[in-house]
Image (tube, rainbow, N blue to C red; front, side, top):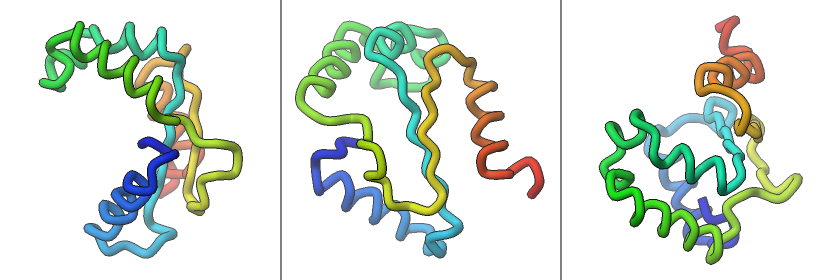
Length: 111
């Protein structure tokens, strides 16, 4: 999500509208990690297996770096107006731990 592009904000609204859910039934999670971590993750077996766009590691890394240079890919404090929002720095945690934190934050474990 390029936070500095209105077209990306419009796209998020469009995706949300596909499901026709009330605002309180939509959940947003912004996962944050430094570029160095994201570049490492670009070459992991799981990502290469499940994301065709990542299979050319050099091209994928170049795209990641270029996007970081051209767009603001992290929200500013208070910028996200949605009621169910979590910003999670996930550099030093596993995917399973991130999922658990998301579940706990939104009380999904109780639902």
